[in-house]
Image (cartoon, rainbow, N blue to C red; front, side):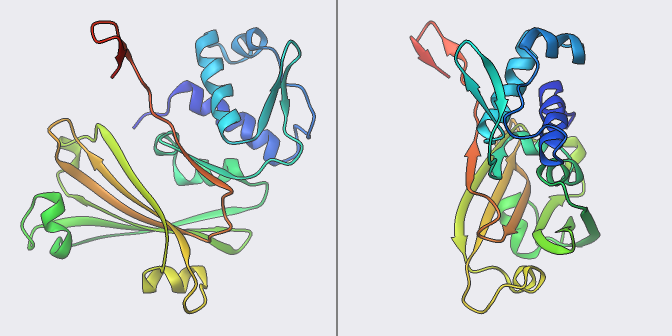
Length: 228
């Protein structure tokens, strides 16, 4: 999926905060100055600042402006992460070297066939993504999608977040001790016809993020005096 402008802008500012280019307490440019700097509308700037606020990277002070947080914690925000590459997402979170390795293969759907609506012998693309930060393993994911996923673009994202015992391969990568829980994110990508077109299972160390935030756009429907 193409990266929206507000995600790109928020990512660039987040990187400056994580690397120390924007130190704690620094005041950001005004909305109008940021709009001119990035060549976007004020609406886009407000969306970018809202994302940075949800990540805990900045704070606002009434009638004064927006400032870099004193001690920003890592907050995982969806669905904005889906618009970024793993390199971009993790790179914006850290001021240390991040490495992303992918292992792509085709395998029979097997136990994932039913949820993907295909036959067990049909092939799916299996992508294993392993991420390290300064040499420390911080994420591993398994993603499965039918080989014709290009014709079935996802329209919705469903996430389930929980503390669980990791799959053996995830435990080995993260160096999890026996019996130790990890933070897991199970994702289903669903198209407009309500078909699951991709699933992903992600594991992080439990202390990786201080919070998990899911953002959803609500459109007001005046006919029902509510939101859709």
